[in-house]
Image (cartoon, rainbow, N blue to C red; front, side, top):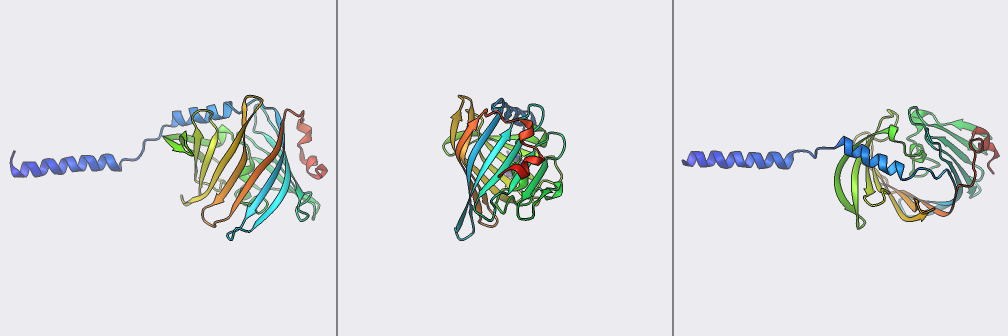
Amino acid sequence: MTKLGRVFARTLLAICFTSVALSPVIADEAEGLRIATERKARNSGWEDTVASTTMVLRDTRGKESERALRVYTLERADEGDKSLTVFDSPADVKGAAFLSFSNTLTPDDQWMYLPKVKRVKRIASQNKSGPFMSSEFAYEDMASFELEKYTFNYLRDDEFDGQSVFVVEQTPVDKFSGYSKQLAFIDQEHYRLLKMDFFDKKGDLLKTLILEDYELYLDQYWRPHTSEMFNEQTGKSTAMFINEIEFKTGLKDSDLDKDSLKRAR
């Protein structure tokens, strides 16, 4: 081979390797949907829960403020779940209540009751990316996980916190969502969500949710007793700790309606 031929061959080989190195990861939509569907299926049939919860808000200097709340959740087979969150302390939020109806094909219905003004306020769709009670959780984060709300792409296998996980990209279909995409880290054994990265509309990392201290209930349903949302852009965070939780308490649909906001004390 001539010198020119050898140079051409090396150049062609370098181009080939560079093309492989720079080629994007090919996402797998079918596998992403399979993983998400299995995750949803493994958390079905629990009927209802009542949880005593503590919320801890931390500012950029590490200063903490604590809130006590109760969360009532009702599973709906063909629709998204219902939930009612009632704040018990401190005094400035005592009696406040938040009602959320998660929907599969239409925007979620959400209302907030503030005892100081004694009125129920509906959360408009375009405002659901706003902060929930001054926390790092948005109103849309308080809704249940429903397959119809996203498109899914499996990206890769990985490890997180010593566990093998699937990394699945989920893209909200709601144009009013505050997120361009989310990366879900789902453990491969139990299909539990261990971590979620949230990206803003510009595509920058906005928040990271870490779920820990999972406990198994009724030999089937896993619940994280610690869920902490870190705002990667401001340095603030909010942690939610489950103190106690009961399953299948007999909650009815009428227990979680708009009138329940004012009844909740």
